[in-house]
Image 1: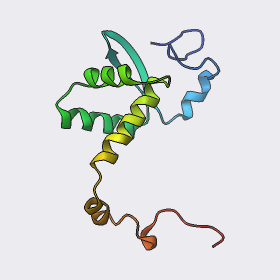
Image 2: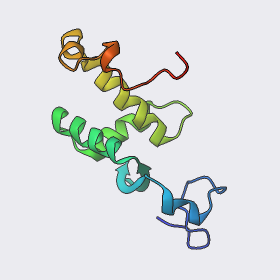
Image 3: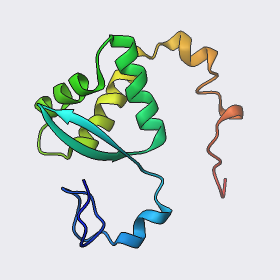
Length: 116
């Protein structure tokens, strides 16, 4: 849902300016949480990860997001979803998987140390 006066989705920070969205990498989507339709904005990779978890767990996105919402502390729903996804995939990571992906090998690190 969009606030016609500001162009901001309901529940978003009022400080956000309508023009700020043109350069945003966030993608809006609608979900139903506890029977109430709501919109949320996530990065495309987060939407993809959320769909993957739903497929792996044979759950609808609405059911999974409702579960995440019920278990969250005082953070926003989108922050809770990001934390959930990180924890989900972190729990699935194995040492063997890291080796296959060549993680932890300094010569293949995507981060360059400047000044060293």
